[in-house]
Image 1 (tube, rainbow, N blue to C red):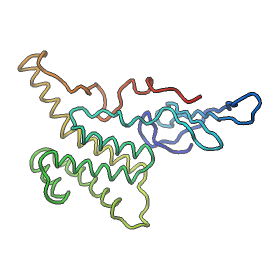
Image 2: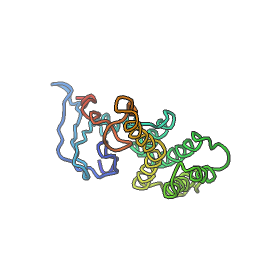
Image 3: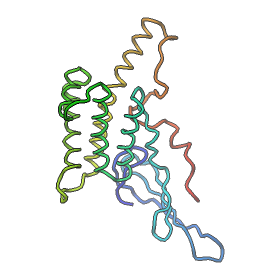
Image 4: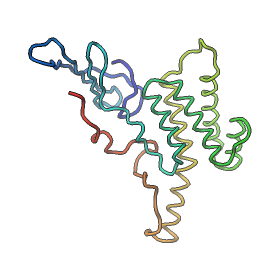
Length: 226
């Protein structure tokens, strides 16, 4: 494989072929599967592909984007964000950008801003101090990209993996600023004023990057199909 989104570092990367071998289906048959081991050029982690008749029939580990952590984010908005990442992992870059745009609009609606265009909604998020001026600019960039993906000419150049990844990362930053950071501040405040026994974090909380996978996600997946 040449370039794909790495399931470990979740960045569009070149994969370097390390080695391969064949698995025959039986002693007296010419049918076989080819197992190829790749390494991500960015993080060095492995990815295994299984081929049959020159077609990929399995890849391990999978992207597992349905397990991305979004503590303190409403469930419906979490689903949209995970769908954006799933689209990115599948190489559907235009869909990833459109889902990121939908996520921003869902944030505005969750904060009671239901009328007007997305421009108005983002500006109202800023006016209501839900987001900073800098994060508002990030939201507008997602809006621009989403509008171009949805309404651009048919001969528009496809969205690059690099651009789609940048848009989904901006989306994650918005969710972190709107939901997770205020919850963390409240947690620290409650711990100080009411005591450690009273302060509770979201069940999905774990140290690490917001929008990341649980630490065990790569070791508790089933192994390759061979």
